[in-house]
Image (cartoon, rainbow, N blue to C red; front, side, top):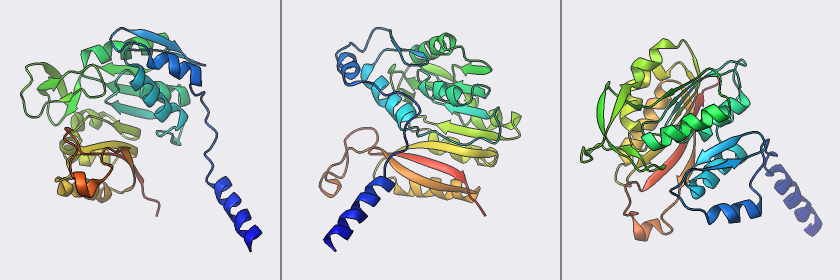
Length: 274
């Protein structure tokens, strides 16, 4: 019995082993060097197949490992020329990943933060993106100018409180999507504006095969999250949810993080198989 249990444990470990990544990870030494660099100047880092311009070493490491090593956006397109929409492209690592796996894809990348957009442009140019359309705009529920908190980082976001004097152009995503008959992949990481944009775009989201949504909310907004999940289910999506950030070690005791968002979830939406 003892040996049998050991063998069962070994088989379980093997079955849970991660699929070997298709992209190289940082070496221990590379991480050590990167972590000691400043987060203000523009720097470049050469990987196996491409070069990335960036400012913030921590965000580069975290995002690269999530996108390229863990391949959270990996999907199977119906053809070699998929349509991919990247909302919240940041410096372009997600767009670079999409172009790495589908070089002939039609890519639309949206990033309203001016400093991040500049790096997105540099990364698209140095890595020779083709058929890629870069938009220095936010996605929203109407064509307008929006108050925007520009951080030059992953924390940049539409300021729904309208307190920031900085303005950015925004387009209505629902209208933009009408030009496509079918969309293979839509990524939406727009730092808290997703609830409004999803609700406004539901009819157009029906044509999307793979929809990645990063949800940002407070612990007292359970109804909002419940509504969002109901909405994507109503248009034919199944969902798989993972923590994007886990800030509360003892949730019953701490209850709130004291930050803009208590809950950050990666929501993977894909069409139900009947």
